[in-house]
Length: 129
Ligand code: THU
Image (tube, rainbow, N blue to C red):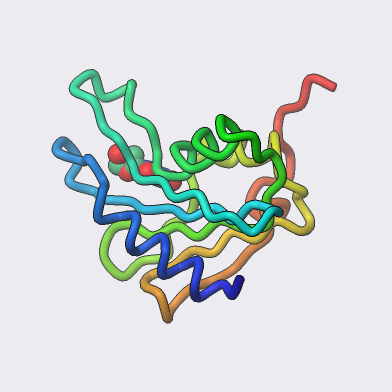
């Protein structure tokens, strides 16, 4: 799947964002090695710290459905900016994704995006192995 198609899926996923507290709506679309796309949005909570980011929503949906290998994730949020994943989401992605091959597509919209590898964004993840 082309990066721009994945970016378009993230833009679509943002429609479902539940962000009544920050009003900062985020969408993500995660491409599995199987070719299946798992979408996610941020899901906020009144206790704030229980909030789940869009990226982790997508990863947890995928893993809970049996997929553990991924090619790329597209993320979009805010207005016209290149949103890069927070540290917690980078750590979660690093659990499942090849740092040199996995693409993080930071999309202002479906036509305007920047791409970095996970390893460039997060060169030293925690690992217990
Ligand atoms: N958020 C995400 O969904 N992904 C990120 O990478 C950064 C932040 C959400 C969490 C919260 O609902 C809102 O954006 C403001 O931080």
